[in-house]
Image (cartoon, rainbow, N blue to C red; front, side, top):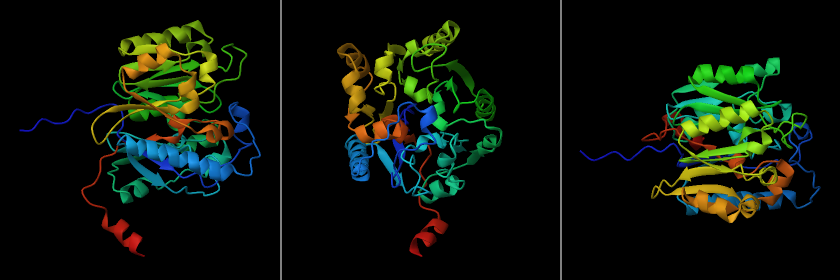
Amino acid sequence: MAERAPVHPSASSVILVRPTGFGFDPLTAPTNAFQRDLHDPELLPRVFEEFDGLLEALDRCGIDVTVLDPVDPRAPNAVFPNNWFSTHRDGTVVLYPMCAPSRRSERDREMDIRLECEGFVVRKLVDLSAFERDDRFLEGTGSLVLDRERNIAFAALSPRTSERTLNAWCGVMQGGQVPFLATLDGTLGGQPIYHTNVVMALGEGFAVICLDAIPYPVDREDVTSELERSGRTVVPITLEQMQQFVGNMLQLRSARDGGSYIFLSEAAFRALTPTQRMALRSHGRLVPVPIPTIERVGGGSVRCMLAENFLERKESPAPSCLSHDLQ
């Protein structure tokens, strides 16, 4: 009997959404200090050029890519789809409650059908969006940095990441949690960082994290202890590096050759020290992608643009999808 290929916790497939309505969003800016309103008349051409550059980098590395059109073509943040849905190896798709009304229009309540039509197997759809009625939010794998091997969610609590909704997610997904506070300047009075995936990233055997952003010593101890239990090598970054999106990276596995690749923005790559680059390269090839416009205007980086796809592929498309395509 032939040996089965190893199952890695890193995805070899991602889902991206075209940035058709990309722009500065005044409704998300109060909780995202990374956004800037540039008033650039060439904004959309620049954004599509950066988006295409990421697609080309993924293709070169052998990562399977599904590109979707946004449900709301005017949504300014649609290029960051990992905030409103996540996929899981058991065939589950989760939809999330979003803080800003301008982001709720991105969410496709029939995402299971949409992904089935794209050729993937969806076994269960979990919709947590009802928490929006109580102003309790949890913005996907922006709010949750997942240790998928151990089913543990790290979560930096903020206006976009509610502990009550985190508890609900852990109940549904039967996972553990490590909640903590993280602020822009690392002080108790500082502005909470809007998403956990700006503070930290987890890969196979490594963790990148800005411990300086965590003001409570007990939180730092909880996070550090959990990372040590996972056996990961911790690569600490500074507050200045975090603000260059060094914490916003994602490790992926090539569907072509099984190689490990760590995707990050060009700005984040430049902010890394030689020692940090060496530490990360022992876990995969670094793939810097230039997305300066998306970072400055949207306030998110490469990891935010990549929704990991852990769903199995069907042997053939569903007949209903085929008939729909022929209409």
